[in-house]
Image 1 (spheres, helix red, strand yellow):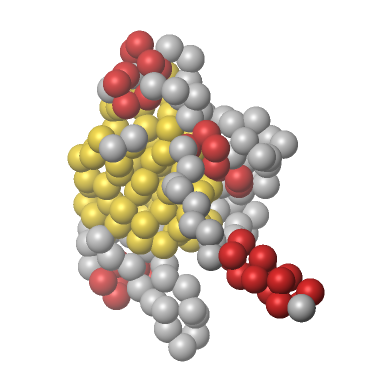
Image 2 (cartoon, rainbow, N blue to C red):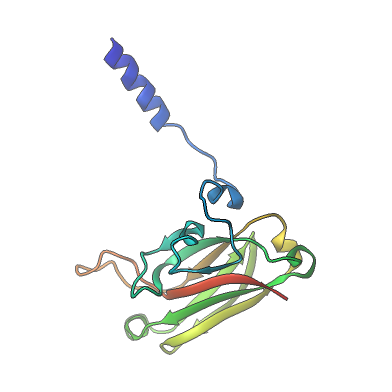
Length: 172
């Protein structure tokens, strides 16, 4: 009888649905403070990489999936003056040669930012102005979306799109 009761409790806990957390709730349980600029190689800031990032490679960068998300602290004055979103990325030849040009866009707190298309491999910066209205609160969620990627394959089970080096909100 005790075993049945315990099983029922475990099943009821497992079946509970949680509502989607707000951006600041995604990082409040971590010891590292929320920052405005995340170096993706930094283990302390990795808690802000919410989804779509793979482990650090070469001690410096991370592959991303086609959709990836980060939570950032707005810089001082951003709620009044706005900020600049800056993603430092690389588009590898392996992606361009297999799928052609890659278009990357971003959404910050529900505001879609203009996309940019990368037709050659190389290092790039996706930089966009973000209006003050999108930067209210202690934390903002930034979702990036790429239209193309590769994988998974028999050699690599990952979906790969672009390489991220850093992402941040800078004061205007």
